[in-house]
Length: 132
Picture 1 (cartoon, rainbow, N blue to C red):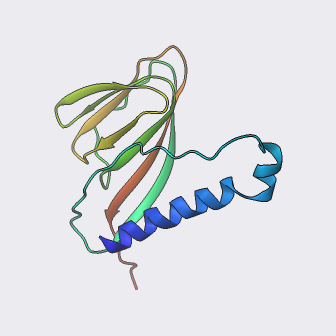
Picture 2 (cartoon, one colour):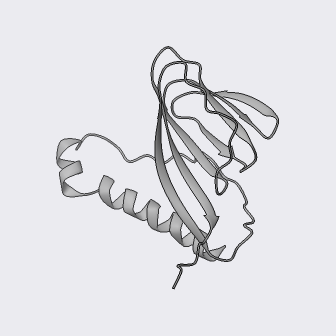
C-alpha cells in the first residue's frame, strides 16, 4: 500500500511541478494555485505490488460498452460528455469534472450525452511478472 501511496504522491508532485514551471507562470501570472480533492477512498489490494495504467477512453455519441470487467479497480475522471455507468448493480450518471470509483466488477458505460464523451481511467491491478 505504501508503494501505491508513493505513486499518487509522485503524480501529484509532477502535476505541481508542471503547474509552477516558469512557462506556465509566464502565461498565467495572474492565476492562483488551487487544489481540490476529487476522491478519497481507502483501498485494499489483492497484491503487494500493482501495475498502474492511465488510459484515455473516448465514447462516440450513443455508444454503450458491452458488459465487461477491468484488470483492477480505480478512479475514473470524466473529461467531457455525460456517461451512465452501471457497476456492480448500481447505476449513476457522471458529467465533466466528476470522479467515480470503478469496483472491478462487471460493468457497462453508456454515452447518454449529446456528443462525444471522454474519461481518464486510473487502473490498479496486481503486477504481472515478466516471463523469462
